Length: 381
View: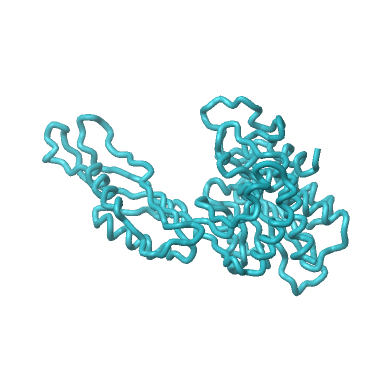
C-alpha cells in the first residue's frame, strides 16, 4: 500500500466528528510523524481536545517565504442513514471509505506524505515548507481563525488548500455570510388574531422580499453570481396562539472582492425595519487568485504534467481550472497570509463530502501526493 493511502486510512480511523470535536489524538499522531521526519511542530488548541498543528521544514534561504499546505482534521457527523461500510476506514475496490475520506483526510495524508518524503530523502529546499493542520473547520473555520488571532502564521509565498477537487485545480471559491434574523410581535388568542401582532407573518414578508434580492456585481468567471437562500424559519408555540417572535436564517455565498458590510446594509434595507439581524454566524470572505499569477501558473503546469498518469476519471478532468461554491479555511488563511496566492487542490471527490458511505479513490490520493511533491520540487527549489 502506498504510504499516502496508508496514512489516509490511519487518519480516517480517528473519530474527529465535530461536534463535539476531538482532533487531539489525530493531531498527536501527525505531530509524531512530522517530528520524526525533522519538522518543527507546534500545537495550538482553541478548546480542550481541539488541537491544530503548525509544522515547518526550514529552507536554506531565509529571504524566501515558505510554501504552505493546509487541511482540516475534523469531520461532520455520520448522519442518520445506515452505512454499508465501516465509517472509520475500509478499503474496497480501489476506494477508501469512511467519514472524512474525501473531506478531507485524503488531502491531508497526500501532502503530509509528500513533505515527509521530501524531508527524509533530499537536502533542505531553498524555500521552506509550512503545514497548517486545523481543528474546527466544519463549524466555521474556528481553528484557522484561532491561529490567525494568535499571529503565529508568519508568511507564505503560496497556499495550497487540499480540499476535495478530484485533483482539479481551483483558483477561487465563494465566501459565506450565515445570518439569523428576528422579528417581534405580540401574542393573542388564535381566534382573535386582530388583537395580536404576528411575528411569523413579518418574517415571511421579509423572506419574500428577498426573492428578488440581487447584488450588483458582475458574475465571476469561475464562480458565477452571488447567491442567497432562506434556509430555515422557526416561530410560534401553539396552534391557537398568535406568535410574538420568529427567527429565520439566511445563507449568502459571496464573490472575491465583495464587501460583506455593504451587503449586510442592503439586506437590512430590503427586509425593512421590522427585522433585526444578529451578528453573523459566519463571515468568511471569498478566495480568488488570478490565473496568470506565477504560483497559479506553476500549479496549473504541474497538474497538467502529473495528472495524466492517473487512471480513469482523474486523468479525464485533470488540468481544468475551476471555481468552487463551498468555503474553506482559505477564507481565513489567505488574508492572514497577506493575500498570498491560493489554490484549492485535493484528491477527494467534491460530491462525496458529507455523504453516507463517503469515499475517495486510492489512485487519486497517490496522484495528489505526486502533484504536491512536484510543486515542492519546482516552487521550493
